[in-house]
Image: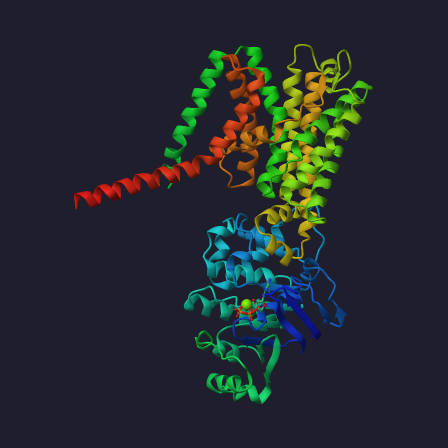
Length: 262
Length: 329
Ligand SMILES: Nc1ncnc2c1ncn2[C@@H]1O[C@H](COP(=O)(O)OP(=O)(O)OP(=O)(O)O)[C@@H](O)[C@H]1O
Ligand SMILES: [Mg+2]
């Protein structure tokens, strides 16, 4: 499904700030996998996602999605089949456009933008139905500019936008980190439901080890731009936060921060 | 909530009524209709600038050049007997100029302001070439779109109002419709949140190029219509148009805000018209035409700096009050 072969990326090459963010990185994700990604600050988690969705080009290596080499595709081209959520709720939606307009834009993912009307009556019915499922009351505020919504509401909306046309791959970069614990829990719940319902192959970065083990079927641990651990199957079933921390400190050069215990 | 809205409307209504009264006292009937006609035409300029400045959120300095480009194309075709083709081609030429700025910005990574200046500078020569090297071309005794309609419409009909108003109405409808299409929505989102746009599989570079093309097409169309309205084209006619258009938009936003597409379009059109009336009034009390540019520059500078000045005043006031409080305690 998603394959990374020997991917290398270095920031600020040939300067004092040179930083190898991913080195000889290899990863193979099966169709339908829900992979959680953890690792300390600066481990390269966000870089991994940015490389997959094309925000950064790689220095060397190849990325395949469904056996198609997407290494040279532009970000907007990959977005046809990759859905994405940022940590910052402000990044995922257009604040001065209404909820239905935002959804309308997302609904056109992968299609050519034409001079047909942006939102049809049929679309609105579908949007209402889907919004109602979020249970946030957004279905009655379709004409509200998204800028007036709370961070949690925006993030839930972004999640809907990223999945309204089912993507081949969903990338979540600490998408609940900026929310208060209760809202974060709610958004995580919605995420899990949408991913399961549509059987979307997903990569989710989190700083919450408990979440990383609770959700999904596979957990990978990154350290200094490398894949440190790959936990799945029975190993994962018997894994606890404490065990994982111990394993980590015995094999990595840096320590996991407290923040990860949250 | 609703009564609050009404209360906030009162000063605006008073302002409008006052303006209308002054216009009635100060200006003659011909001046009033003439200014309205110009207001309609300059609405096209304001709408064009609205697309780059407000929708794409990028100031586009191409405007002064693409306005003259529209003047040049329109005046030369009218001079050679094709007034309608002239307007049509001024729109096309403006779109091309906008695309050049857009391509410079997106594909060649030139900074937005510089990209506009580059196109603007290049256009000086292009425009003079189009006008065969003459800085002034007169359409005296030549057919224009206005003289054409004068012939087919009944005598005594207010032809110029009908033509200018008709053009503006059509353009308003087309702009409104466009901004609600899939493409138009993608354009609006590009100015609103580029991350989101790219994550929604929209080519933001392409959107910017399209946006600048439409913006400058409208600006050039304005130049094209103005040239035939004045029966003359001036190779320096575009100077100051960006600032004049900004002033129009800012004035309009005082009345209508910028919350929805409708209010934005109304702001541009009404603002452009109000701005022309303000100029006419200023002229009627003795301002010279050579001071127009300074006047519009002042309007824009003042309007944009009001929030900062307000903040400064509030801060100073608070500081002084706090100091006073300490002395008392
Ligand atoms: N755009 C960039 N320019 C320069 N350096 C960068 C850039 N993006 C990331 N880096 C560097 O690459 C390394 C990996 O960063 P990355 O953002 O992938 O870490 P992360 O695992 O997501 O960390 P966090 O948990 O803090 O989000 C860091 O050292 C970071 O400073
Ligand atoms: Mg990160």
